[in-house]
Length: 619
Image (cartoon, rainbow, N blue to C red; front, side):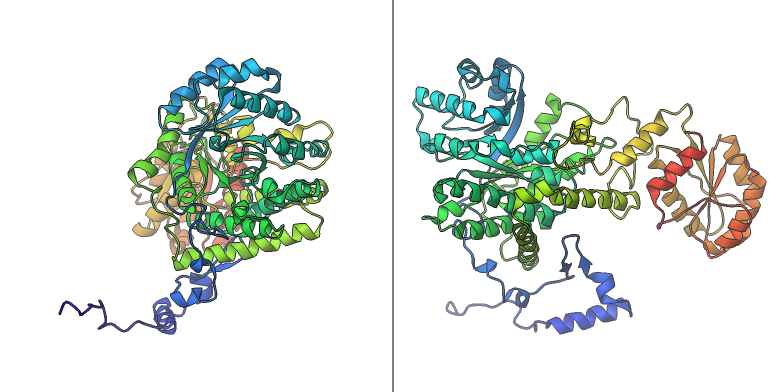
């Protein structure tokens, strides 16, 4: 008996794919399988409702091993450890150092310093880095692009003075002229000759990277995942090509490049994005024939998105950034920044920064995401997403290369036009609730007030649009929720906040469903909504609405009953308030002929409808 290996479930016959499909067809009761269950992604490919082992038979990614080329399964073999990073804006080096030492005692092991170039000198570096062990903590630095060589000299001198083991210095100096072009519309190509000089200065510090690709800028501008991924690869290849053309050894050049990527709310697809990114970057670097495959590793700092953050119901931002952080962790990033939840409307507070740090510490210390390398490997769904994203991103990469490379595309404005068009589309989808923003265009907090909160300009609009005489087009950065926030803040600042009253009558199920829909719809503008259990007559409902001071009366009933109730209610109201029908009943043309012009339903453009109502109400 001891030699017998028990096989579980042998009494069950595994169903075939066709048997699954046959069963689904029965359950759909004639509905179209492709339309009902197959998801057409924004990234340009279809996602099936289920996957089986046979779907992976032609894929190479499941055969990959952690820590080995092409690094789809991560750069490490023995853990999924990543750096918990927090960025600090430095106005005074002593205060910046004090804050850094404080947060290093609270779970952070990566610091990102940002400071003005005017402060740069040896004394500034000494004060800023006092008591910070650079051989233990990852430290990165950003200053004016024109002063990175000066910064590099100061840091090399400091590291040599302190006698650090240069192998143990991990971090980066932020040099990325193309990012400034995208943000500000200013041509900074005259700075590119500084890049090989910078790499040369830091060649003895193998883990201090200095050529950055900030595709998180694209993410925060509304880019879809394939756009960020494809353009990030082209961006990195542009820098790698320029470095090797300048005579820099390819192994050294590749090891000096670091990617800063955003993380959107698309949980599984973001996991796949980081896997696909490493796979494709490894293939790109391999074409330059490096001596060692280790040069093909893609080092990624991931930052949770600001694009989907909201001013209203801002604690929902914690839910967004938490799932985003989980995606990045499972995707195997080098380091991560969680954006504080209050970023849309204020400088981060001690509280919001603490929560942001703890969001990473939670998935590390309590959920142990740092223990297992690439836990999603072998998942039929994620392996499919990885392959599909890689294929679509590669198409975009090749398209950019055919147009002369990333720098040429930026100068021509094609990258900016593509991302800006996506941003416009996404704002349009949000206006129609095709793209949900919880707490903003869907299920808003009815009673919440802004309490003086105003959108931070850096979050809701780009300074690039105000640049003097831009040399190239710039990205237009606007958070997805910004249009609804502007509408709601306008309503809140009005002399009187409109009151919307639900005149519920007739069929119980339909009137309740439509009242709930209407309350959510109108609360998106910040209106005060009053729901009701129901009225016996329209006259009773209208009288109650007027007694409650209603500016808008919404009749909520079934489609069939609107023919009976809507016109009498409208006539009895007699213009004393705006009259709205909840739904798009078959009798709509008859109602319009009677003078009823306002309807709210699932096909409405919510934002434009509410703007129109504000205008009618004199707001």
